Image (spheres, rainbow over the protein chains, first blue to last red):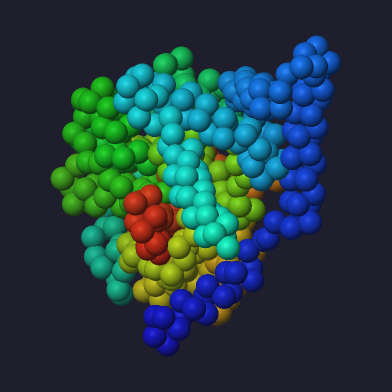
Length: 151
Length: 335
């Protein structure tokens, strides 16, 4: 048997043999975690609104982001966030909490290499690709939107 | 030394295991083998500022204890062979500089323990050296940042992933001082690549390498699984060892009854380590605790240790290359 056929046969066998994460449980966990984070955000929003009823939505949104980011960084620093993320998966990662965690965890991890070459250089090691892709996709969506709006 | 068959070598002198020492972190210390380890460290930085420095201290403590137990003077150790998982083998390099011993740094990823034993035994069999120290280890926190993500980064591991063992194992071999356990034969592995490129699925990547080395050894020596009390692989994990059993069965060897995997047995199933342990410290710490102590008491007489290593780097992995793997086999014989 030549190598390629052997490898293909083996990879098919490995695929069958490897345990799969149950998609229903994963989705359910992500839903619970994502929903909890969003409910918390809504709660903060309602609380702030009750104190400052005149605040406009944009400012309010900024405050909610700041609070969720601060909470995430605090949980990351105390070493609890990775446990939540293990349970919640994308439910924890997709809201702004995931982004905050990816930056904070890098900052903590690479502090030992100094402020410039450690924290400075590697803070966006995980978040960097998210930023680059975010900008690139927004650009594409923007162009598509522009073309559609012409008609 | 003489070569038998294609990959196996037989030692002609008595190469004895004079002393051994194992050190592990707290997670491994909660596992099923906790009574066998010499040291269980609750502080994985060993009082140092960084994990990297902590790893070096773990090496030093293990090696010093192994030397002390052997009653051989440090000046009489001719050679220190070993390695770790860090880039440029930094942990071992710093340890060797502290110990002031002649040093050969080896890298075969998680197969470094058997590789060290092979190189050490060769020196002893040639008569060029009298006492050789073999030590390898790994550290969860240093490996994690080098190969994966920051420790506090929240992500989900694949259900088939493994957990790097924090641990060090040191074995002192000698051709002058006799002891109960001897290295008899070894088989040097060939780099095997069955096309697995998923970096999380190390067990599946490494199992074919283990299978090829074991089969070559059986063929070369004319023996089979029934001739050994224990066949132990290094760090295939649960999935990898299940795959190995299937692959061996395909070749006509049923290893179900006397087979263990160090990575699979070092953690309990409820310790959230998925398929089990991995890393250069995995087979090193289990060999120098559980396996050799069972051999010293005479419970096990003929043992095969097959450490398996995945030889990729993060760069080759990101470029889409599959994972080349190796497995070296060492046969121990007790009295």
